Length: 296
Image 1 (cartoon, helix red, strand yellow):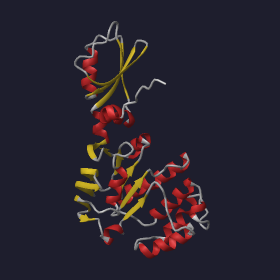
Image 2: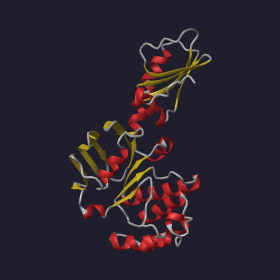
Image 3: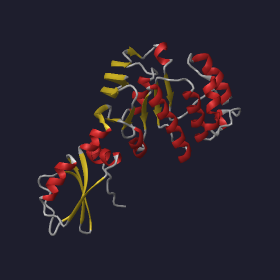
Image 4: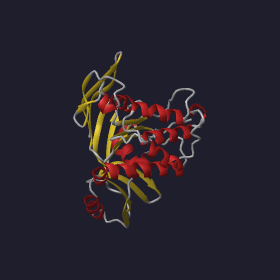
């Protein structure tokens, strides 16, 4: 269980985190979402004990993280830019990990060899970005972490390897109750794996909910009416038109929106699946994330 309360971090006169609260339950996958510069990586560096907070608290299973070696033994962290010792290979890093992490499992390392297409004797710095990420996952999974923290984890990986890695991660979530916190701009991918979502913007946590409750409270509606569409009674977040078809993003449950759409005497209407990306842009992001029309 990861719990953050009132987290504050200031760099010079810039407040990067401004009273952030976060709760990620044990055995779940938590998606951290936000625009560039929102504070995601700064938050993650506090969760892993890299940064010391100016205010607030960060705990894992009730224990403070900063300068707590016992807790750090239970955390695996894969950053966006993987860094290892310059001349080291994956095999070299395996030996280093074994000397640092008490839980490192060499039997698991050998079993996972077939899952990754990495030349384990070649220096990691000479591998492609995707291969470096594979090496990082290979080593991290052998630590048997209780908490896996990932910052843009599958960037650079091909679709088959992405599926392979998520399969291994979800196996650990299911069988060992591992908690995964993942920050990514690939909202489509998060939608497939996350059960909780937190949205951070300008150093503040805007919203934190289960993914199912988010999707239950916002609806994508397509409707055709004989004349002008009257949207009164609907809390419309976005409205676009293609020919006679109106596509609306509306706040409310599917049942509520269906009843209100039926009252418009439509020629046709349908409730469509809504993606996490659409929720993020139209419900959570507002004007900061709307796509702007630029005249060139």
